[in-house]
Amino acid sequence: MNNPNNDIEAHSEEHSFRDTMATADASGKRIWLYPKNSKGKYTNWRNALSVLFLAMLISGPFVRINGEPLLLIDILSRKFIILGKIFWPQDFHIFLLIMIAFVIFIGLFTVIYGRVFCGWVCPQTIFMESVFRKMEYWIEGDWKDRMQLDKQDWNAEKVFKKSVKHAVFFLLSFAIANLLLSYIIGSEKVLQILTTNPSDQLGTIAALLVFTVVFYWIYAKFREQVCTVICPYGRLQGVLLDKKSLVVIYDYIRGEKRAKFKMHESRKEIDKGDCIDCNHCVHVCPAGIDIRNGTQLECINCTACMDACDHVMKTVGLPKGLVRMDSEVGVAEGKPFRFTMRIMGYTAVLVVLLVFISCLLVFRSDVETSMLRTPGTLYQSLDDNKVSNLYTIKMINKTSGQIAVQVKVLSDKGELKLIGKDLVVPSQGMVETAAFVILDKKDIKKTKTDIKLGVYAGTKELETFSTTFIGPVY
Ligand code: SF4
Ligand code: SF4
Image 1 (spheres, helix red, strand yellow):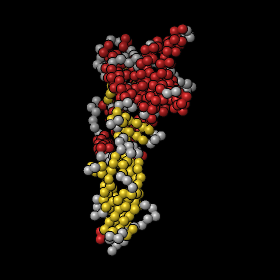
Image 2: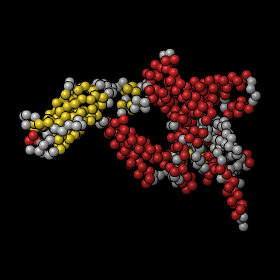
Image 3: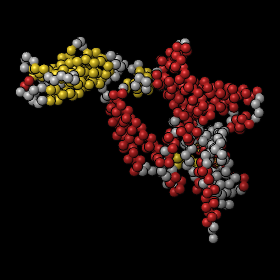
Image 4: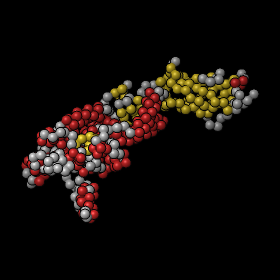
């Protein structure tokens, strides 16, 4: 009969990896990772995608649509540009909806595809794995060379390689800091800062250097800890993933019991699985984990272990896919991936939100008008059986060109008379003026009448809005 204590001990030993981090020893000291350079089909796809995303990231502040950048997040001036369209704090509701859609998108995406965003799209991973890590391989060599270099005493070779690496890392960090600043204050201002006397721009130069040092520290020292310790998305995986989510997974049914390949000729005859316990999947892992322990918080779904294992399987003449993209249900029951009701519900909400946001973006008015009765005034009775109300008009131009506008009363048979000259709203600016709305006494049926007005640029209607008109009832 089995001793239950033995079972408990075996279980705790099997799950002991859950009590520790792959990157910290028992005393909590950091274990430095030396991931092996990954090669294979998925790595090639990931590299190609990284080049595309890097090109998009770098060109973002420089590409212009109608003279405006693709993306600008000017927090200081509270001005935001998305795909060349300028958004002001008045458009906050659009941002709120975009944020809601984004959160739902992330949730939906994770439920279906697990954490593939982290490994394939996240700028942190792209910069770390496709820029800084590649530089490290290039300067210091592959994992064993780097391990050896770190172990060896300081000599001319080590001083040279470390100096070159950290100089390159610092320059790259400076470039990323400039890129980030271009998204905040615009590429023209960054170019202007870089080409003028530094003593005239001390504040901005200091901010640039702080960003540079932070990026340098992240990519030279902190590295994979960002995904494990800081990133909230990584922490949410336990909530978002279910057993049907696609993840990078080890097929334990096929792989266990693992055993070194040389131990036997025919694995099935001696009751061994396909995993030859070569640890190649662990060596390439940038998070330092063993995917054979199951889905773990640290795994960013980069698929490097899939490439490594496929290569091993091909070499030993076994089918590929021992480590693959699949769901837990898929591995346990051999069931193909299916859309669940939850995924379909998320998708429906996402599509509705995206359509709604697209409509808001496309049909957003170029001007935004507020027209309120001037405080402290009531109505004025005029000689010709008419009544007037005095209004204050504030108009914001959300485009990069000035607009000459006319405001017309659309409801009732009233007219609007501007006090002062024609209304011209400056580019990306605001104008404030006063105007009378005049109605015939016979058209006033209530003390407070709702009136509809329209803003026009020539014959083009830019916006319609409502305000109230006060008058005596005759
Ligand atoms: S376990 Fe595999 S997919 Fe996950 S981070 Fe490591 S190498 Fe990438
Ligand atoms: S690479 Fe494949 S065969 Fe080698 S240890 Fe990992 S899962 Fe097993």
